[in-house]
Amino acid sequence: MRTHPFLPACYFAALLFPCSCTKHAGQPVPPVTNKPFLVFNAMQYQGMPDLTGQGLRNVNLINETSLFTSSEAETPDSAKIAALGTQASGEPGIPVIFDIEAWPYTGSGLQATIDSFLEVIRVFKQTDTGAMGFYGVVPNDADTWENIEPAGGANYVRWQQLNTALTPIADKIDLFFPSFYTHDNDTTSWSDFVTATLGELQKYNVHKPVYAFLWPQYHDGSPDQYQFLDTNVWKFELKTLFPLVDGIVIWSSSKTTLGVSNEWSDSASWWIVTEAFMAEHQIN
Image (cartoon, rainbow, N blue to C red; front, side):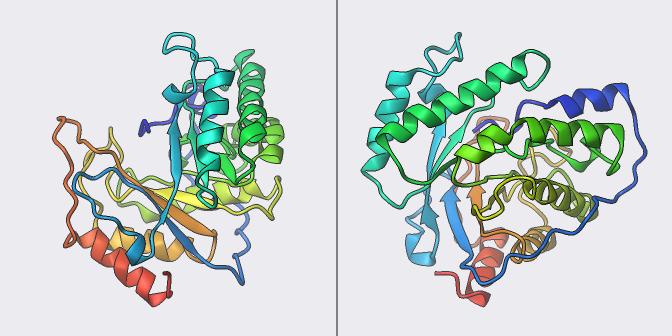
């Protein structure tokens, strides 16, 4: 997975229409009640053991390069998608997540993007009827709160309009996978971004499960890129999301910016916090 989703229309609008730094994300999101909280493993750390015994569940994360006609064309290949569906049907109960980040969301390209996503769903569902969704597509991943603030401003409204346009995709998928990666230790802005994104979900089918992507390292391009999150920040994110979503997908790259492998460590502070969080909430 590329760690910086391609930028939606609201990002470019932010460059043209600077707005204030008001930190308010609108209406609170109703808490999720009476549901199990699931933790999925999409990490790629070298030497990582099987964590299913610790309560983490497997996911089938499919990169866009596996379903394109070619790296140059970046168009969905029906034969490849059907083959992926057949393969996924042999792993019932494991959610499928497509990570497609090459298609544009601006201008005349938007409708073509929507049509391409719908084609992926249509072909995949012919051979696999299990639960599936897309990483960071609906609501569209604006990357940070700063790209869309303030609530009600021009950038925010454009982002909302884009999310409305993506409703046909939301209607066809089974699961939502918003991305809430971390750029710094500003938990207020991060919380506002979460509230805004989950608030946008209310315009879709709210009965579909929502699993939020988290990454225990700072986003690439940030001052502390690839460093592991401050323990208190990671703890805050887990605590914040627990009542709001149906679970999380913990993702990681296998390498740092210098190409050095990230090794798994049972004693990493973020993992100790995660284990304590899962024990507290009896997630197994």
